[in-house]
Length: 146
Image (cartoon, rainbow, N blue to C red; front, side, top):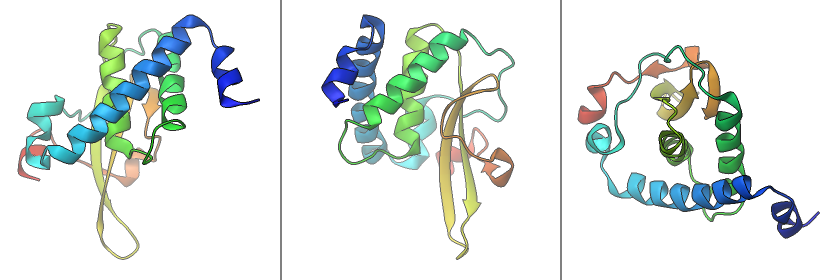
């Protein structure tokens, strides 16, 4: 099935969410590229050190996650994990659902520091699925000095 047919088969709420996700992921990609890491916390909001207990409205969380996946298949440059997580955070905030944004680091095989961002609502993954234990979380104040 073509992308257009697939899109047209979506209900109106999913169509709107897909357009919203496309716009926000492009905006987030621009912001991440233009804001230095030391200002991320001020610009992007709090960085979590643990998940909040509530999962919220799981149907809405899953709808947002799928809208982001559809958006990523239709935007240039395949945005990395932070724009994806920010997009999810903003979409969920608009829907009244609290989420937890995490930024962590780990060393790759060559010892180079790698960053990764992910978003969760309670125990439900929104973006950036990873093995959390493999990452050292940036503490809320660390983003200002990174």
